[in-house]
Image 1 (cartoon, rainbow over the protein chains, first blue to last red):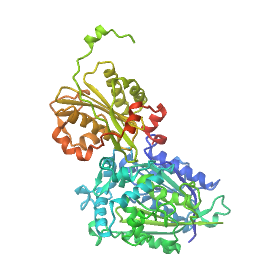
Image 2 (cartoon, each protein chain N blue to C red; image 1 turned 135 degrees about the vertical axis):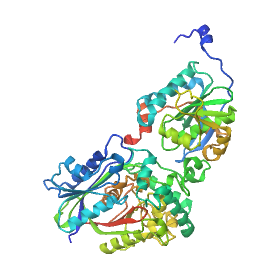
Image 3 (cartoon, rainbow over the protein chains, first blue to last red; image 1 turned 60 degrees about the horizontal axis):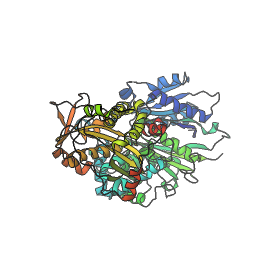
Image 4 (cartoon, one colour; image 1 turned 90 degrees about the vertical axis):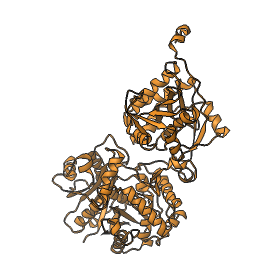
Length: 396
Length: 230
C-alpha cells in the first residue's frame, strides 16, 4: 500500500447560499482544491462526491457524473457516495483506498450539500430519513429529538451539565467568528444564553435538555481535497499532509438496541483503528475536529476518542482543556456548531481544516501552535457509522 | 409640504388615548443590551430611512414586510392611520428592529408588522413579544389579531404562541389567514416568551432616547442578508 498525501484542499464559505445550486457548490470547492493542488497537466483519474440529499432536496441524483462533466474532467471515473452525515469521510476513505492500492494516482474528493433550499422543518425531516423507518421515524423521531434523549441519559450517567454544554457552544461560536468559512460568525456569552433570565427567549429549548445554541445550523456548503501518492509529491511548495491512518466502525441502527446508549462504540473503534494504523496514541494528537452536530456530541466524542475518561469530557471543557491553547484543542474551526453542517460536506470540511492547521494556514487567531498530527471524527446516523482519520504533516 | 389644516380636520381620524409603553431592556445572546421603547410620531422620518433599503430585499419576504411597514408608518405620520403605535429596539442607540400595531377598538388590537434588522439574536421575537405585551398589559385589550407574511413569522408567532386560527374575521392585512392571541393564551405563554427588565438603567435609556441611529444602507442590507450574502 502506498502512503497517500492530501495535495490540495479547498472549501467555500458555508452558510445560506441562495445564489448557488448544488452543482455550483461542488464545482467551486473542487476548483479551489484543484487550484491548491497545482496539478498542472496531470489528469484526475477519479472523482468521489459525497452527498446525502441531492435526490431528496434537489431532485437530482448521480451528482458525481454531472460534476466530472461540469469540471471538464471526462473521462475520469466518478461515483457518488451516500453514507448519511458520514458521507464526506466515506468519500475520502474510498479515494484513499483507491490511491493507496495503486489503482489511481490522482483522486478528487468533494463533499457538498444544499440544505437551505427547503424550510428548516423539511431539512430536519430529510436528515431523519437516516433513522429506522419502523422503529424510529414513524414515531416522529428527529435527530434533535434523539440527541435530546441521548443528552438526558448522558447527563444522568456521566454528570454532564447544561453549563458545560453551553461552554462548548460559546467556545465553538467564538472560533467560528474567526473563521471566514463559518456559517455562524457571532460570538455568544454565557450571560446571554444561560445565566440571564432573558436566556429563556434567547436560547429556547429545542429538545430538552438541548437548547437552540446546542444545535448546529442548517447550512449549504462544500469542501474538497485532492489525493496523490506521497512518493509522487516531491519538493512541494507547502508541507505535505498524509492520511496516516483511518478507521471505520458501525453500530446498531436503532439506539434502543444498544446495551448502553451512552456508549458510542463506533467512535471508540473507529478512532482506535485510526490510531493503530497511524501508530499514535490519543495523547499524540495536536488538534481534533469532532462531529459536534449537538454540543453533547463534542463532549461524548472527546471521551470515546480517548482524550478524556468517560465522565471527564464535560469537566475538560469547563477547565478550558479543549480550547485553543488547551491540552487538546477541539473544533478550532468552530466545528459543525459554527462552521455549519451541510451533511455531505462535513467529513471533507473537517479534513480540510486539519490540513490547513498542519500547514499553518488558518491565520494566527485560530492556529494551533506546532500542530503536526490531527484527528477527525465524522459521525454518521446517531453513531451507527463513524469514520476517523489521523492526518500527519510530513516535512520534506 | 403645505398642509391645509382646515381640510386636515376632516381627513384626520379621531384617535383614542393610548397608554404609553414603558421601556425595558433585554440582554441578548451576545450579551448586548437591547432597549425596547415606544417611538414617537416625530421619529417616523428616521424610521422610514431605515426601512427603505429593505424594499428591494426578497429574502425572507423583507420586501413585502418593508413596503407595508413603510406605508403604515407613513400613514401614521400623516395622520391617515388611526390609533397606531410603533416600538423600536436599539442597541447603543442603533436601531435594530421595529414593530407596529394599532387599536382596532378598545378590546381588539391589530398586530401589523415586525422587522428585524439585526438577525440571529431573536430581536424580532423580543420585539413581537413587546408588542403583545403592549396590547394586553398596557393598552388593556382583550385580544390581538395577528397574521404572518413570511414562514419565519408563521413559525415565530403562530407556532411558538400556539395562536388560535380565526375563520370568522378578516385581518386588515389583505385578508390573509387571521390568528388570535387572547389574554389567557398570552399569560400562559408569557413566562417563556416575554422578558425584559424595568426600569431601564438611566445611562442606557439616555443613549436610546437621545437619537435613533440608523446604519447606512449597505450595512442594513448586510445585517439582513448576512455577511457575504449568507
